[in-house]
Image (cartoon, rainbow, N blue to C red; front, side):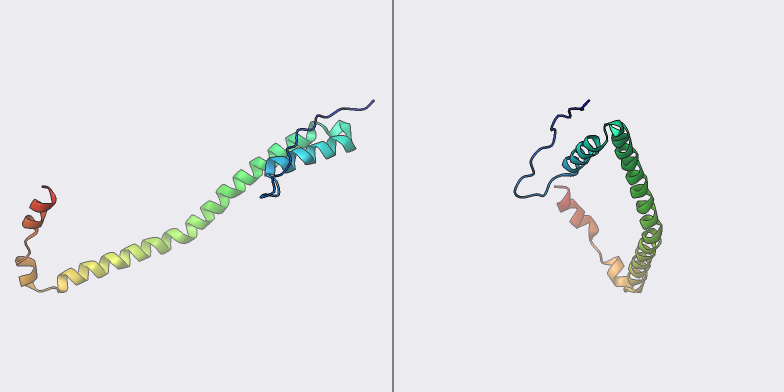
Length: 109
């Protein structure tokens, strides 16, 4: 008894070598033709591998964040301290002579 499997694969365009869906469909067809009893195990394996890839993607993103968050916080802290010390090192006449109200009047018009 032969099992007939419809050809669901789409031909790859000339600009690409095929999508992941095309590859999975072709792999499913090859597995079913080789052994018809594996017809259900191949999609389940693909679903489990997809789930594993999603979990690993999240895990790698968490590892990346755990490495770069302290670096980013340190950079922001250093730039804030540099700005704060620069403003404190400016002369008293600079702070008194600022005319921010005049600038804001033109900004809001």
